[in-house]
Image (cartoon, rainbow, N blue to C red):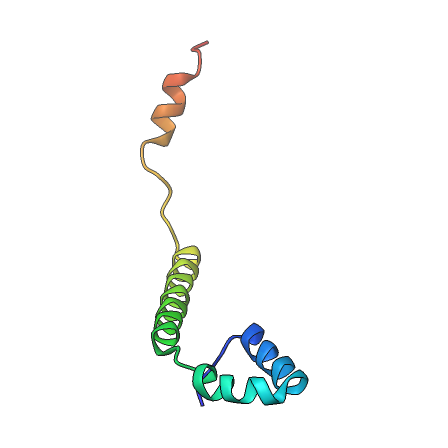
Amino acid sequence: MRSRTPQGATAWTVALLSFPIISVPCYLVFGRSKFNGYLVKRKTLDRRARDDLAKIERLATEDVPPPTGLEEVVAATLPSK
């Protein structure tokens, strides 16, 4: 059995309990989870998001040297006395 969305599982459960004579044949034809493409895409995007988050966390914890030449820029923009 493969993963299905919570909404789909709830809908099938309600249908199977409410209208078993109609919904059982429909489930056998349409209810099988055929979301391989969805699952692969979802896992790929989740992995990419985790990798991006790890990269951001790594960059946030790195020691970044202060910009060079900032003092000269500030001194040039301030009015001289």
